[in-house]
Image: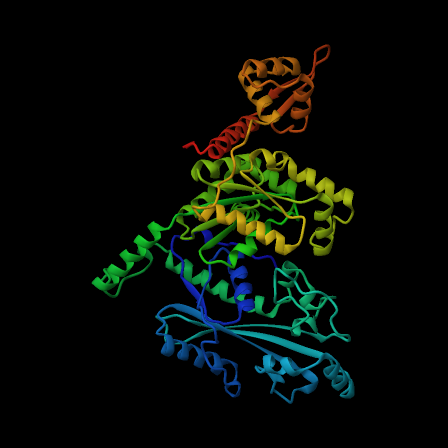
Length: 534
């Protein structure tokens, strides 16, 4: 199950939804699910559960009463939902009554795997279980609650868990029932899966997906044209409500919006970075490949491989994804808008043009380290050998950005150590964007050889030999040795076309994409020097 944006990012108006919970792990999981579908999720901040849990009521009554209690105690006038998880251990349940049912948290806190294993074996070793997640959604204008259900069948493992918890996704751990539970159709315990792998089997992911699907429908109705509905009351809100709306608009205008463009090779840590930032308030993430799939779906085209994606971009515009994302960012209420996975220089250039203070962050990691992560994640089963992984890198590089990541980046973040070290580096980066006392990126001392070589080739205006390019670079005051011009241009075939005719020296010709790269490099240089390039 791979979440899709659907219509989410095209809506001008979206419902503001809160999750009422004191469980930080649940909240993070829900925020990640919402963001991967193109929505932001807000939350109620509290040190305790904002409602009492009377397990004797049953699931629906418990959630119904929880909503009533939240409204009564906190005076909430917002759209919000609550969630509860329950467990049925078949061998220990009687008839329709689940055991331990809604009391799963209390039961697990005093249970041991060894004692449960022994009890199950004594009762015939029926290890079947069902884990359930139920959500109740409150809409202020609706007199009833809307319920959503997700469940996963499976079995209790025959041995205690021995894997390490996920540092990034804390609900994927051996320290909860997820460490004992093997879903049907899986060979791993739910707790030892990678996040994306777990989405197919996770009971809470299923109920959250059902909730998000309904919100998609509600947001669709919220965005239909006036000719599709009639107004049964005066169109203008009361004076007090008008004042509140005006105040909220002023608050939004006061917020300085920041754009962070994250580039990097496969398994370098782009998703880890964006998922880490999602836990913060006022952050919106736009994943380029999800936007591309949405655009392809609208065009009734299939995009399954990198070759498919490249053909689609060539046919519809190498910056078409960035055009779409730019429109989303312009309507985004978030303070920090993170764009991950852009692959063409045309895309990055367009965003930097539209948002002049955008930062371009290259997440870098050693290729062997990235391959080890790829093997652990088991996402692409067709790429098993290191040589195939390197071929996939080359396939991605021809899009353009990954030919020149250090050339175009305003910042480089290494991700070759521990997750905690990586998070510290991310925090330092964000501090330079949001804290006026933090130092901005340092200006570059001089232009790179590639930049100088391309610039000389552009000045010549036609195909030229390496010697001619070297001479022109010297004329421009930025010399490059003849051998080095060949080395620099040979490495970027998308930006400089090799021209070799019989009985003539090897020449290079600047391509349209090379011109686009030069324009982007100039914008980055201006940003680094603190100049305005608009």
